[in-house]
Amino acid sequence: MPAAVIDLPPHDAARRLALLLESTGEGIFGVDMSGACTFVNRAACEMLGWRTEEVLGRNMHELIHHSYADGRHYPECDCPIFNAFRRGMPCRIDDEVIWRADGTPFAVEYASHPIVENGVVQGAVASFVDITARKQAEALLRASHDELERRVAERTAEIRELAHHLEAMRETERKRIAREIHDELGSILVALKMDVNWLERRVGDAAQREAMQAKCHRMGGLVDTAVDAVGRIITDLRPSILDHQGLWAALEWQAQEFESACSDDTAVDFKMHVAADVAPPGGGLAIAVFRIFQEVLSNIARHAQARQVAIRIDVDAPPAPVLYLQVRDDGRGAPPEALADPRSYGVMGMRERAAQFGGRLGIDSAPGRGTTVRLVMPIGDAP
Image (cartoon, rainbow, N blue to C red; front, side, top):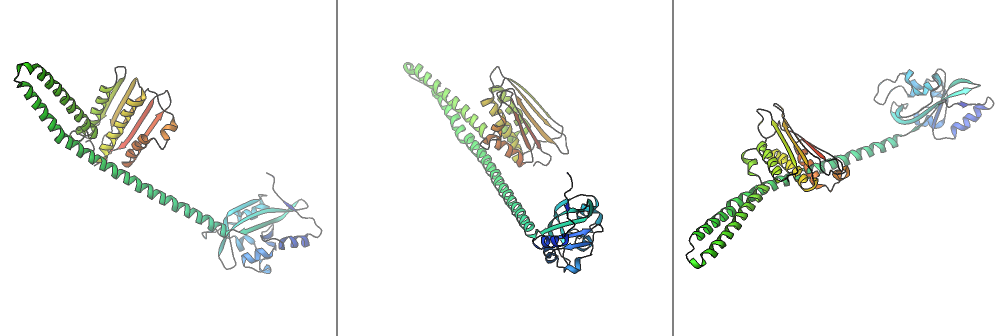
């Protein structure tokens, strides 16, 4: 871009320049080829705290532009104001300061352009405005923005902590209910089954024996169904294998249950490798991994219509083991916007469970191209 210049006519230049300088509220001064001030207007002197006669003839960089805002020396060779006449480089700067007569700086926006007279560069003219108020407003706005972000982060952390607490409470309640169902209802059903069997063996009336036996047989079948239903409910609430045999066994069991529930035309390929000396994590981390795995398989069973499902579970060796879980299917898939929808509570819940323990959950899916879910969960510091 060609340099912007000010070409002053030789006649009446001083008078016209003086009128121009005094009619503006911006600070304006000119320098010759050595950097000495050749003219300065009243607004500049008022902002700088110098009288006109104290400024004229002085090197303007040494007088008002000698240091950065933090006090570091500002070399004259780097001064954009002087580069306007030395290198023909006009400038507009809004992130520097200039210095008053009392030694205090103030933020300015300044511009500098070469002065050309009869085709020859004679110096430069610089204009500046005090933008202290603008900078303060910007700083206040940034502070307000930072404070808002801090509060949002704090509130988000509080909500997340509450969600984690509620989830832990739900798991505890599931465990308690499952135990009570097993201890109370399960034992009652078993006792009822035994009574029905006893009654079936002791029907005395020969005429009614066959009908009574059939009735008892049907009653026994209903009891068996109830016992199976109770067992299934208990397992859904809290698989006992997770508490008794650990996460690795629970993941394998869940994969086998999923494979058993799939139709004959769905092939399930399950592979799991756990490095030696890696004990299964317990507590909330184990529950989080298991529930994520359970949710992924449940989504495939309900929505995917997949013909092939590949499950891979790998656990690194110590000292900082990491669990890698990947489930890939060739089913219907889903558009990315559906996975990012804030109302996709299942996806959101899995991601929150993973994030609670420093894990990451990624989902790649597209309509007609299946879905791949990857979980990376550090378990080195797991309780």
